[in-house]
Length: 99
Image (cartoon, rainbow, N blue to C red; front, side, top):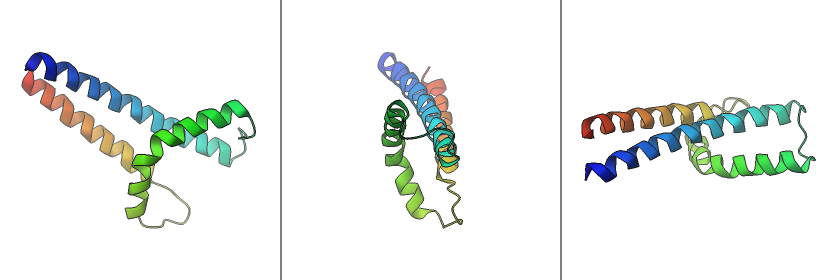
């Protein structure tokens, strides 16, 4: 059983780390678009932003529903990153117990 669970936990751990970077990229891209540093009329930028948004919105949207309105400041990515770090810590501790 440990032969399957250990690598599976390792894979989940690394996927959460990768997803954390996708959230950070989404935040940075939204800032760059808001300050008109990059433009969505560029097809490549639009494609990357669309992919990043499609990956992050399923987890950010429920968080935004429960967050209070802070006057145009969206802290849902910060909360999501904290939750992802917590999940990584839990998975790392589970992996240490198993292995």
